[in-house]
Image 1 (spheres, rainbow, N blue to C red):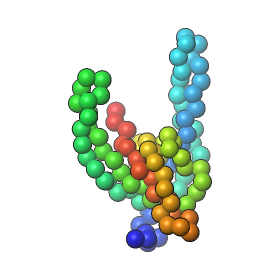
Image 2 (image 1 turned 180 degrees about the vertical axis):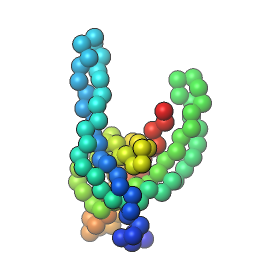
Image 3 (image 1 turned 180 degrees about the horizontal axis):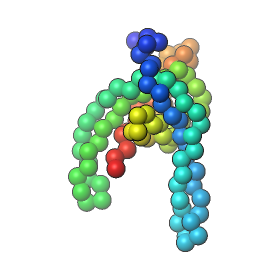
Length: 108
């Protein structure tokens, strides 16, 4: 089902990771913004997983926006102070009018 234009009303920032050496053998990750779009964010699944020996909540979302080629897996979308890690990206329709991103809400 195609989203109506009024459905794409949340401002979403698109960010990609930039890793730089920290001088002690590790890396420091910074997120670089590549602009913003309007889109829709729909919760999909909720669950739990064990993360570092403790139980953590897991929430996935589908983010729909107008099609663009610079959104890839591993990117991050930020809306209203909440960050979403992009797990997978797929065309919403064959005409490349819209893009669906399966995302995981970043906790913490």
